[in-house]
Length: 335
Image (cartoon, rainbow, N blue to C red; front, side):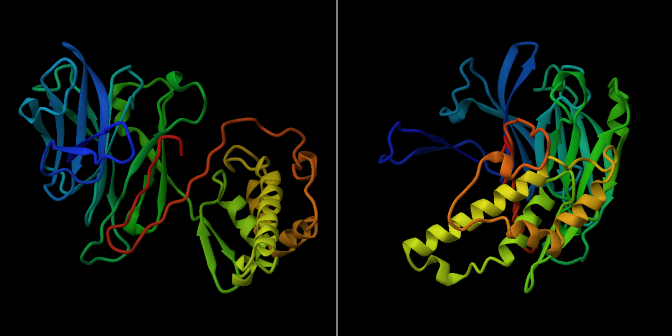
């Protein structure tokens, strides 16, 4: 694990400092509240050393350049290959917890309570869910993958988070939600897993596999269905006029697709969502929207938005690409 010092310009190499040997790609930087005051810490999911480890600096300004001041302790080395770690207040008690996954033949999702004295205190472990298995056994195969806490509404401080979980080599994605409203420590064990079968979008010589509502999967599927019949190919990028026309088609398809996005919701709470998704990924509906695209001009928002009132928020877009074997995960706090 390296700390790279920013030189303040683009042409000077960044000076590296070795913090530790052992951490994998998932390392989270977080300030933990302690009896001595806030402490900047690095918590690492060390896959190949099969340990969850925390690192800190014994100085007031958290100067990681002095390797002699860097301290560490193993939180847990009994859960196998540690895949991912995230810091979050999972039980809404105002204190930080660690959300941790391992990866192997049988994967589990854990929560650790961060003690007030993290240097020596007990990180109490809770098992949230277990029994995750890869679809096929073999070298490099394992389940599950990374976990991320998410909040169902804007009142973040008034609720416990739900958890999004990648199944990695089991080929699934999971959404775990707490079953109680007022969160206690015992609620670490009260999460339930809801599995979604996802949707399939026929794109001729390709098959798009993605999440259904309330994710943006149906919107992406509709966009691809519209573009399927727009004649975009390698020749569309041969010169500037061709590129301009191709980009215009793409932009118009996205606008029309997002006009349907505002109707989507969670089928557990909104009626007709399943039927809407089926319509959105159908060839007939895509053809109807395709006919609305004018190749010579664009339109005002009312032309695209079919909802009576479009919701205003920051918006989000997320694409995950997974390779065979162990897999890859790209994560951003705004996605």
